[in-house]
Amino acid sequence: MSPTQRINEARFHFTATLSTIDTSTVLRLPEKVSKELPSRGQVAVHGTINGVKFQTVLEPDGNFGHWMRVGDTLRRTAGISPGDAATIDIRVTEEWPEPSVPQDLEKALKAAPQKIQTLWHEITPMARWEWVRWVNATKNPNTRQRRVDVSISKLQSGKRRPCCFNLSACTDPDLSKNGRLRDA
Image (cartoon, rainbow, N blue to C red; front, top):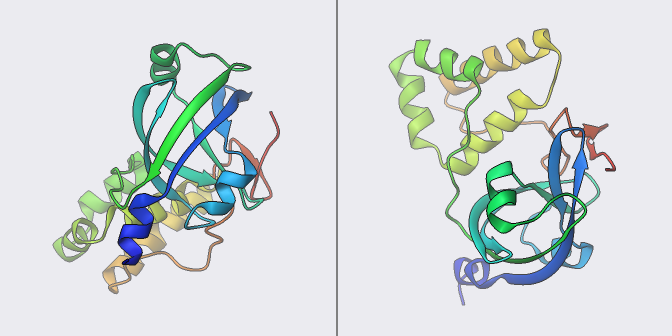
């Protein structure tokens, strides 16, 4: 059995309770499920929540676990609210959805030489997720601008991924403290 077959056969069924951190609704995966995922970092999955299909990238919580954001549309369609328990079925997949590229990075990419734009489109969606996570991992506008500039510089030199950041940390600055997902 190839590693790809093992990844695509990783399926999980569990119940978890939705919680709120500030204005975001999140679902923490049970520790047992997170331990069986193929990475301590991000993991792409297809699944259902209360029978409603979704595709997402599970985020690391900085404590060797994982979580996912549950947007308003998915919550309404699945008929759940923060505090409710939901039934989740997920399947690990190698098919990564495209990340939402933040405006500042997107603007820099569009203004960049064709070589950089070509490389951006040639790298995998997983690699694009890593660049986006690294840029988004700070609230400080000066640090963020520096990360956008460094991203363009590294892409110019042929780098396909950012380096030197903890892939198993929670990098959402609105939901984390010191690289760990905050409690609800």
